[in-house]
Image (cartoon, rainbow, N blue to C red; front, side):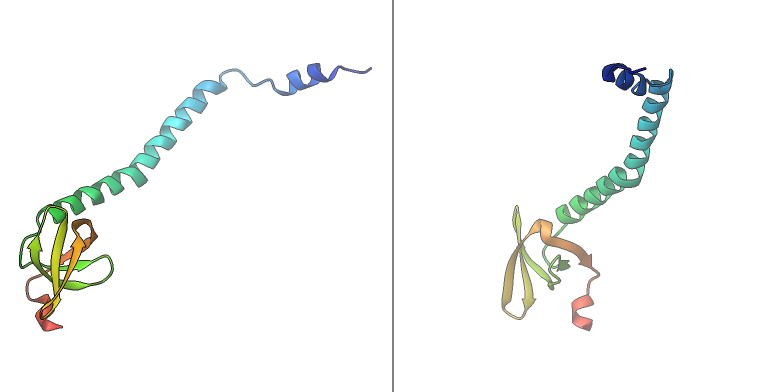
Length: 109
């Protein structure tokens, strides 16, 4: 007995009843896990970095993403002037500041 091919494919593609609801629930759970494991911590870090950058003032000791440590000499709207040695100043973007050091950190090293 020979069966036509479309009939065989149609039978193989049949899904059990009720599978759609469990698939939707699983997708919602996976999205929830991704939100709490990846998206939420990243948003928290971005918020902390924005607060750090907006709070920069003249005299703060900072480290940039490139590893340059210096003292903030001038604060602009998007750029900072950082003094890295006596009479050596570098202009960097505010977003390039990685961390603010405690006062006096540069004198000790």
